Length: 286
Length: 353
Image (cartoon, chains in turn red, purple):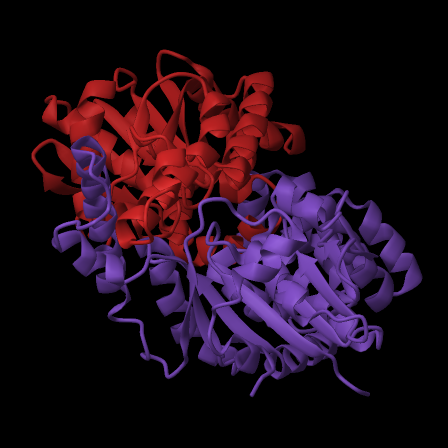
């Protein structure tokens, strides 16, 4: 899982993808790799799970071997124009990217390719053994993965097209890049993951290296008939809730292939504590 | 015009908004009070319970509950209706055929939110309903539902065209000469000429709708302010952070939420119960040990919830209503009607009192 240069982590909103992305980055750094944890959306989930208030656009060191960064749209556009497309800088880049930001918001594929370009650009830069990207949520992921193709369909020639083709090659190379999908064992998340998996496999935009079940509640070692017979008390209610959640999850767990199954973490308070605990658990799964 | 009682149910993704919306509508519906719940992306089993078979803005009656109807937001259909209603016929045809129309309607989170808000307004004005419950797209923690009307009008207002042409609405011929400007020559090199022209032409057509759309945005926002708004969350850090952001940014549109609903709440009593010895529960030591260990971890989770909520309760002067964590999400209209039974004050809140 951690042997390639780029690992994208995605999943339906609220399933814990940022926490697991942070945990995997922590594990890889513990193993002695130079790691960049990169937030591809402007939410602060990854930062909190890395134990910092916010992540800047330029990577900063967080702990030995681990750096963090977050996409910031206008900075990403600037960088894209300057470095990747080698736009002549006769005009101040700020002005150009401000003007172009309207286009970026409107034209299909442009915003996505700039966002998609950042983690791949960091791979090309060669400063890192591994880039772990907290990718956009599953609902939007497709349009990001397909952006290089969208662009090559819309733009007949030019630098943008060449650049898009190069991005697509790195993303599709199974030795360089992979995608990890996170789901909880619940209907909406599992079904959405299944749909996305089928679509990504068909497009062959990136290798899906795994589908992990998060917040799994293991059944109690006590039959629920015995619990139901007990006198009413918090212990009985908690046991009934636990057994009920476990059996509600069971059919959806069956629908997710294989290991690992990451347990629900009871009573863990801060996001940084969550990712530290997950990192300990993940050390075995990767 | 007599306005229906309207409830907007908002919040981050994955917190149970759609279920709470349906349960609220079940509570409101009576044979003599025609009630509609407009859902967004319901889970299959909830859709089955409401007898929703496909995406459609057309309400259909919910079996088993007199007076209750349901629909599922169809974003593309809502946008088609907007374009038919607010642009000139020939422009409408051109817009609907433009590839960017589909791309924009499908991809922009704000476009989905605008569709939801516009559809709500249309339903409010239809005169058909006594009560309407609106589930909202999770984009930006629900904020986009309130911000999208004015933001969409701004986008259609044509920042790009202003920048290209100045304040005048240009003619089409002018548009084709726009690469005469140096900044556009660069954009043209970078993006490729055809792309830039296509986008500009699309925005130019959209811009003809600006006046009507801006007026409409103001009307939608009046309907939103008149409705009761409840924000649904769980005690998890990410949705709680969204709630705080929601309150801070909502002042921009002068909407004030009427309540926060905490979903999947655990009983506070579990925190202390976990610390006490179990008495009189069972004579079987193995069973007692298993239940004690289980109560200990759930007590720990209940304590985490209580801590996480400390900053929220009463912070914005709105009531915090709790909905207990249930093992199986409600999948029938009967279980939907029980879900909110013990939620004190809910009826007063949604009545807008």
